[in-house]
Length: 118
Image (cartoon, rainbow, N blue to C red; front, side, top):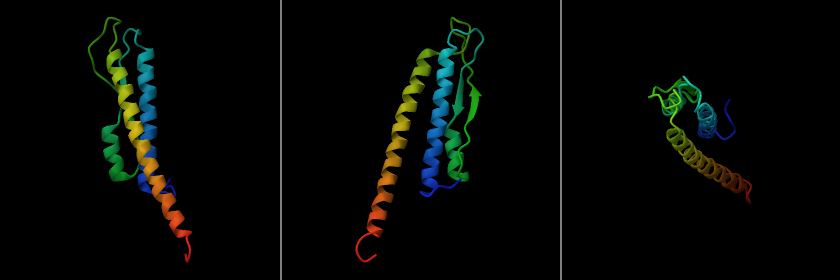
């Protein structure tokens, strides 16, 4: 659904939803760190954003990440998962900055339209 603020805002909102989904998957991976046979999952995100630039919608996909088995007999690397959490936080902050900038621009336009003689 298109928002009042346009396709850029929709794309940024979709990206935040995808990042939230990725954060949930990382949390699930960490929760299963000691589960024998569990394979880490991730959200196919970069390709999804590229597609979103063309189609206008974000549709992230959860994929199994192939990896070497750890001591618990599963494919989860705690260090890798913590690194992903840091990456998610950085990207979310960048997106929030983009949304903030977009909102300030729209606010300024609305103020300008409401000025004298308009």
